Amino acid sequence: MSVESGVVPVVVDEAVRGAPAPALRGLVGWYSGYRQRGVAPTRHRGLPSPYLTLILTLDEPLTVAAHPDRRDAPGDYVTLLGGLHTAPALIEVPGRQSGVQVALGPLGARALLGLPAGGLAGIDVHAEDVLGAEARYAQERLREAADWPGRFAVLDAWLLGRLREAGPPPEVCEAWRLVLASRGLIRVATLAGEVGWSERHLRSRFLAETGLTPKAAARVVRFDLARRHLATRPDSPDLAGLAADHGYADQSHLDREFTALAGCAPSAWLAEEFRNIQAGHHPPGRGWERQQTSSEEQPP
Image: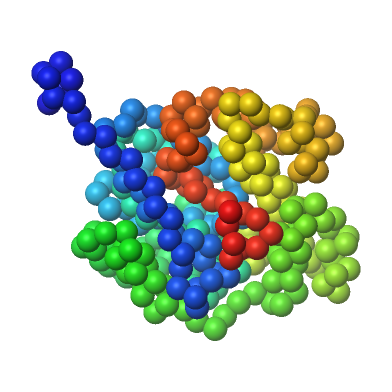
């Protein structure tokens, strides 16, 4: 029924954050549940971040209009698994969507996915292509659950059942930790010295395990923190102060990096995001709820 007929459509806009089971922490950052109905159709940018994305939808597929690698064809996904990337994805939000996103740290990829995060670098795939039929089974279990705590419990049980004692070399783990702890400001030469590898060897192994080079990872971490900070003050952004706080040479440097990684300037991103959503609730899709501080276990 339409507004003209005297019946106002019911609007549903739910966004719920859940913590993974203790045994998964450090491998999984968090779970984000979302359900929207009756909202205005829009397009959302899925931005680069320090997390892989695993999405299991509930009532309708996720529509990816453009992938980080623009050579990949658009499509609909009942389940989606995406690696780390340095270009935005574009997500169509047709006024209704629902599902759960898992923020997966790259150091957890071997233990939970059975392959290094580098194997998914810059791409999106149907999750069952990597995880087999159990990805669709988990998605069906999510649909049967009665509420968000029940859905997060389904994810806990599924991921704990997949958990294996596998991980990247300790040098890669330490390098990733240092990139996060430095807020993306550490130099590659310093990083190599800290882990005892040559810069060339570090670059090769780090890229294979995470999907990004150390320099690109630092760039993504710095950008992710800057845009999260920017989103806390959408009505009065201080771009010069933001640039200084996050290690950019000046506001022009911030603008260039934002345009390269988000596909638009900071002011344009704010206008898009906060025209579509209010109070910081981001529409789901690749990268929609990624947050990062100096620890993968403690999103802000």
